[in-house]
Length: 229
Image (cartoon, rainbow, N blue to C red; front, side, top):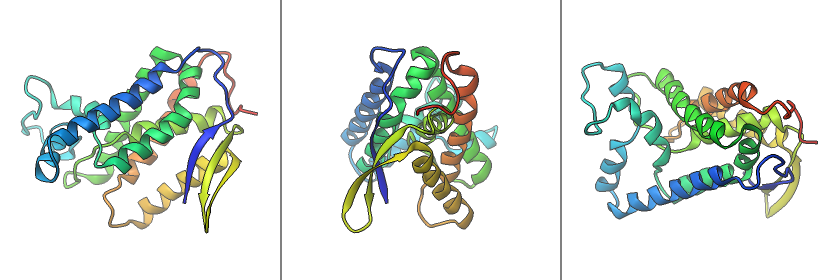
């Protein structure tokens, strides 16, 4: 229904959001590597090796899937693999729009820790909802949702230019709280009502809440809450 294009919220504490752009580049490079392994069964087999799978965490007898590395590492690796181009590009668009300001608010090093923590914890939320029979989880959505949750807390009044698709695409500036609030409401709706798609709505909501909470102790002292005017 809508896509964010950019925001009117300049960075103030860093010269360049190289962590955000580095994460975007890494996600795209990993997806290209996935494509190099072919499509169909070979693509899925490669991705599932690095996916977060509930049964491996809920079954203590399950073998590790990464040679020489604990299976717990997939709580991070899953966030760099995607199902298709639409999946990776949509996640990276949201990260590009909102990530630079959260990196600015937290600092480069804290932002890396924040992003990875949102990825890992949102996967655990997915496990809690999916149970042992849940499918495998890939994608940066949980981590990016954490960035969006932080944006709601830190910059709810910042203007985000959004492309609305009703009859024809129309770019409109709206407060971040409105845009991200609608997005959050959609996640709640599909989580409660349910649908047949493989989208991990619980991971999205988990990441959103986790990001909103984590950014408060991690932000710079000079960054106020509920700003962006």
